Length: 237
Length: 235
Image (cartoon, rainbow over all chains, first blue to last red; front, top):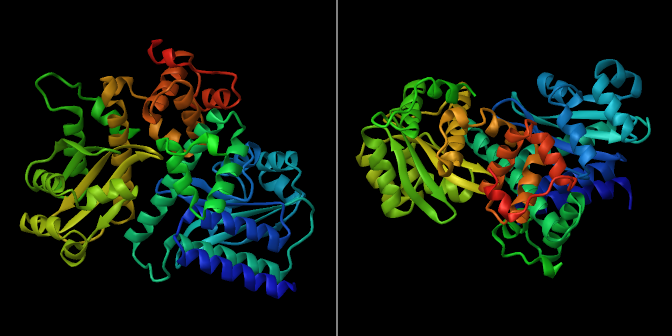
């Protein structure tokens, strides 16, 4: 498949997700997975700002505890935080740049084997609602075209979060963002419950939940809700 | 948390207004709204009106109880804020019964905030006013801060704790750390508790051993620290 065909296929898949039974967290997880594939990155995460101005991770291509910490660390320093404040793309950040600008962030990313990072703003007109963070395991640079693809993914993520392009009102934006943030908390609680019931690690619990959601053609939030209300039987795994 | 600190400045007395009542009164004063209501609403549905300012706030809450529909019922069920700056335009199609009663009572805008932590669902904070219009960014942030304070109060309601016993940053902290939510899930299974009780148990344990909730949560995830059903009563 050519690069253009792959690209077209991804955008059709994302558009499909938007019209089917819509679950914003599923959609954003798919989006981070696809941005990793399309841009040859090692990991991707999507962070949204809450009303208190904190950046919170909503979805990522992998859910290892260490990776989640690198995202969370960026409430103190890192490209996501700077990108969120300035609204500017920060791409092709190499080791030297990261080390100089964000020493703590750099140290953590090195330990995970990452050698490059990129942050792309999620923008709704004049407002920055969050950022997509990409990590590379080599210092290969993104081309101008690839940066454009990444930014298109960030724009699609914004549209998906708001569910409709015509969302112009502040109140609807707040409703959607708060929903996404609370769904994420629901999923974390369900990961804990499943991990203890099935005696598996937290990462594995998440992988299981996603696989179940796909197998049953339902949403991650539905699976999480079933786990929390007890209607999801661990023996079914 | 400033709002809780402000409420804590005045000790609750037997005869004086309750903590939830003082919260809604303070909220109505601090924000450009006409009135505020605070209701208990769990998975089972609407529970009780915990506090409301004078006037239409009580009418608004009673309507939602009676009819089982309205912005606050929807906020709780859909787990999202329901912001209705132009009630007359948007409410009649969405909640016909409620809209008629609310408009009659002179209500023109409602902002309902669910008081939830993921699957923990304890109530709704409703702000209303007699004129149309949105809350601006700063007002929304303030309203959400009141919602956080209300959530903290409601979470502690079953324990009978006063503000002095409440973890001042409980809500802010738990909302930002994935590990605390994961640990809450784990503890709820280990100790055979609901999620809300499991969260409070984690908090109580952190307090007793004088460590941060995040550190305690990490030990729970690593299974270094385990809880059992009887741990519920160990204090």
